[in-house]
Image (cartoon, rainbow, N blue to C red; front, side, top):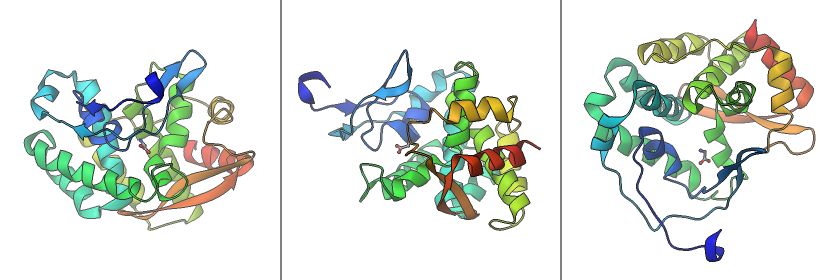
Amino acid sequence: IYLRGIKCVQIPTSYLAAVDSSTGGKTAVDLPAGKNLAGAFHMPSLVICDTDCFKTLSKETFEDGVAESIKHGLIADADFFRFMLENDITENIEEVVRRNVEIKTSFVLGDEKDTGKRQMLNFGHTIGHAAEKVSNFALTHGHAVAIGMALVLRAQEKLGIGEAGMTEKLLAALKKYDLPSECPYSAEQLMSAALQDKKRTGDKINLVCLEKPGKAFLKPMNMEELEDIIRLGLE
Ligand code: GLY
């Protein structure tokens, strides 16, 4: 926003920023009225990532990035998802960050303004953002996304959408990294927050679903259908 945009270099010091926000050019900041409400699409000239910084993070702050890494595996690379399930992220940190950035870039290139395939990066985020908001941000971003992914996959399996057994695989990964999978809020609370989702267009929202681990798709739906998904996922 300053001087209608200046060159910037992103130097992520959290694992979450390294695997997500430092790549892709979204620059929003929070306003009292809500999260990420003021900002632009503005690509950094350079991203410098020193993985030693992550050694200073609290367990919870590190886990926030792990949820986004699990998301990247689930939407784009089943082998990467399995790798994180069978190995430890911290012991393979450089390779894991590199793969996260490659996956994120593959969704951003060709859709920098977030009108198409980039939206698949929102897997777990429609419900996750709602849960974050209901908690008044006591629930941190990655923890909320973990809950959002689990809720959507539970609902999908009940509706017979996508490959069977995906919820079990996700829950195993969340458990391994101490991330939550149960939503502490009601469908009414989540819906009232989802109605304020800035990605909503009129009555329509694109919910990200999984066809199978490694392959996501956008399911356009109205807010009533979203409420049904929320209720099913909470049951
Ligand atoms: N964090 C989602 C995106 O950059 O589009």
